[in-house]
Length: 174
Image 1 (spheres, rainbow, N blue to C red):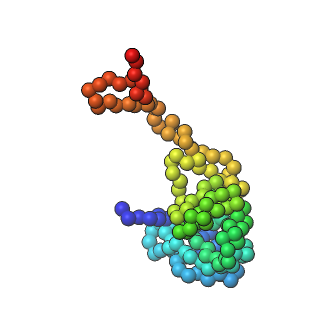
Image 2: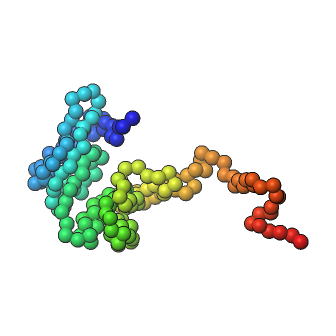
Image 3: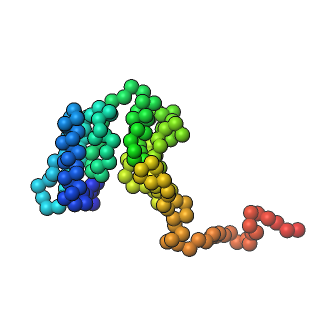
């Protein structure tokens, strides 16, 4: 209860995260918070936020660790260009209170990922959504609008609470 993030999967993942943070610092990045291994059994680390230039090589790597690279940009178009410059394309997000920015991010001119989110994070996906990535992280979809079929029997149900016996869609004879 109240857990938002569990451990990394194994020691190799912890080393990959620490290596990515070291590389970020070597490339001029500044760790603003987090990035430490917790002193307890398991593979627990604190999530890290790193301020870094978008042109640095580490930004292009997919580490599979709780690292947020914070980068500055001067326009939404520039931010989307930075976003789309990576090889990966599974999930993306924008946080904004501008409907115009949200629509631009979700349009063909916006995110090139398989999952595009507005004002929610990039982990997970709704069960009814077509799950899958683009570029080097996919090109296909799992689940989607028919995913429920594996778990249920499809049926249409109509309940009449009146004392009448109506026909479908209000049809009347005579």
